[in-house]
Image (cartoon, rainbow, N blue to C red):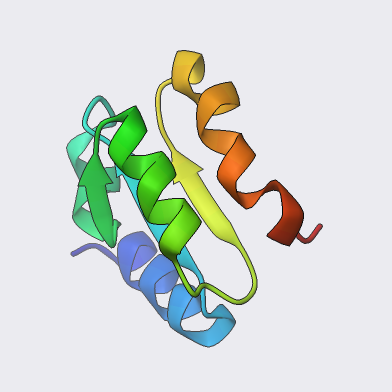
Length: 77
């Protein structure tokens, strides 16, 4: 794991965040992810997560609108 990946993992722990990565993302993103799956699996995981602060989506652009809906009520900006 490189220094950026370590920083991302540390921030996830501090902020109680979760990284969800689509199968189509690059390997470096998948390595840092808490969960890797297809669009449906990512949406389901986002709906069931206990992440307190933010859910980080790392997926292909075409799946982002569909994946956004389960977490809309809990999204914080």
